[in-house]
Every structure is written in structure tokens, then in C-alpha cells.
Length: 120
Image (tube, helix red, strand yellow):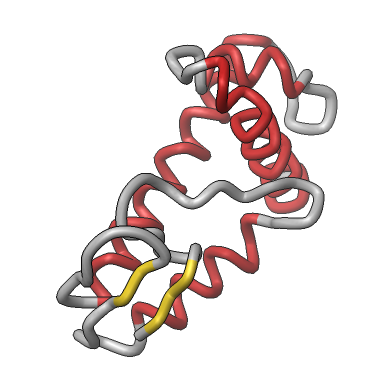
């Protein structure tokens, strides 16, 4: 299964808001998981043995990030609708290198948009 950047092979996929969105990405992972134990030819890195297993790992990582954004919102006393992307990025991606700050902010914006839509 060729997965391109949906499953990278190393690292995690960046959802670049506003062009990218969390809900369709999660749906794509669900479809990939349903394919079972096909070998994965990711966008980067070596082949992986099972698209289903890797899709579950990527989904778990994305859900963990969403939980981190929820925790940041609680700490800031804000909702997804009124949160500052910069403040959420500082809390969730505070250890990220400055060279990837723009990608981290785009990811945080996508996560905030998803939470605003799904938890309103």
C-alpha cells in the first residue's frame, strides 16, 4: 500500500490548516486500517509490515495530540473557538525546534478547528 504522507514512515503527519483538516485525516486512517496487514510503502523511510497496525498508531498519536490541546485549553481557560493558536502552540509544541514553528502552528490551528467543530 502506497501511503504517501498520510503515513510517513517516520515522524508524524502535519495537518496544515486551513487546507488540511483532522476529520478527513482520521477517516483516511480508518480506511487504511480496514485494509488489514498489507505492507506499507510510506512517503519516507523503510517499508512497514502492516498498514492496519501503523494506521492505529497514527490515530493514537493524533488523539493524544488532541488531548494535549484540550489540556492546553483548560490551562488557558479558553475554548477552541477563542483560543490563541500561538498560546496553544507554546503549550503543546513548546519543545519543538524553532525551524518547525510554522508547521506546529498550522497543526495547532487544525486541531483547534476540529475541536471547535466536534465539541461545540
